[in-house]
Image (cartoon, rainbow, N blue to C red):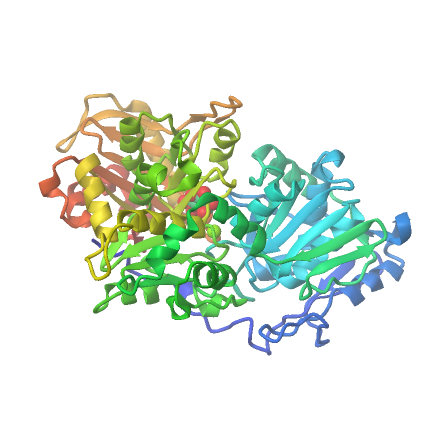
Length: 639
Ligand SMILES: O=P(O)(O)OC[C@H]1O[C@H](O)[C@H](O)[C@@H](O)[C@@H]1O
Ligand SMILES: [Mg+2]
């Protein structure tokens, strides 16, 4: 299989000269006040009472926020049950528009005067009061740089706005799937996730915040648009005068009517996974002497989950966990589980006598990559294979999945499974949020995206550890009757058998990162124009056009419509070329080109995807005039 090739490493991803652990860097947050508008500076040398031994010292926000409360700039607006709430004047800040997965900016931007506080207050200004007043909100994150300070700011503003209780992960840690699980399990009104997902962390890198609603699902655009609107007119922040919460100790602390509970980040989530999977079955595989498993937590949030789940519960050996300590800067890494950034794992799996099963997860634990010995499972194949095997290998699906879904650019491998199993099938735009309505309506059980996201309706986020357990369940089920020493069915065997049954969807994605926005936008405009003039039956080299369009989606549950979700050229043999601009990049524009070709003939399955797709890739580049528009000779990443 072709490896993802990093053809031209961008300086932003390799020059990791600074890290959060460097003591010379500004790492402390102190809020000071000018005559009218409070300003935040992050350059105090005061040590924090909250600092953990593993992480750099940070100043407590407490003293500064306290200072604000006594300063003339803030006004006490209420004192319910002993909490003093202050109104701090502020001014709108431009650019706080929420993207695909929350608000993402450089950490330094979030650390600017009131930047985070404004957004949090704008969020409360946007929610109906009954959605949070005296309610329960969850708070967690991936452990990246600035999360600890951010957690204190969020807790104080939540209290200031009348939230009844905040449930926060110990040390501020909760993976994205765990937040979704906790919201659902504790019947919370919603929750905050402090993460920039798979983007690097540290003073020079990214930070992010996302709000999920009571089903555990990211807030819909109707809410995020409102938040943005409110960031443009905000003039006060309501902050409770309470001390910083000690995030290192489990338990409840009360402040008048408001309370904070620090919870174990693993227990609710683990309990849920135990209800989904057959842990005995998984244990039977992981404890086999002839099955070697390795999980790369990439020094990100799943480091907090890997040992309790894989080792303590499921019997994997401790040395099967790679990079298992969550670090504020992900150990100077780029916590994205793909063949480029999870290189350490890939080298092990493709090295001499590599393990039988390898997996990695991203910064906040919702993405996954699955590998066998010398073998990469594409995310598009992965979801299809999980769906095809779920009923027999995973107890949660024992009566069969209700329906299947994928994002539009994801390959059609899942479609073939839905057809064969006669299951309802949905194609949604890129973005996990589009699966939520279908799940809530009981129409969807298993879904996935080519962008290394796989999951099910056990929660409302994609789930990296869930995907790993799903795969191990499948391998364990296939091998459950194997005697000691007998050759086991491998990851590669499972995939090839799947291709033999359903056909193989060759798939590749070309990424052109950090292009000039102007050229990239012009290219998409050009393609839209081409699409509007296109006619079925037109010849494109040896391919015949079935149709071309700009993907538009009507949600079958609430009827909402989203358009301009990616330009598609679909040919009569089922081949597809898709172009879209990334919604998650933090600089310039990232052009993504997705290429897919279906091959039913099993004798042609053992071909490298890049070789099989070469004619279609050449066609994709010539149709779009990509070189002319972007000036790029080659992609930055090929998956
Ligand atoms: O817009 P892109 O950069 O292609 O990113 C797309 C992906 O971004 C995030 O990971 C979302 O959670 C995914 O649901 C989405 O598929
Ligand atoms: Mg993520």
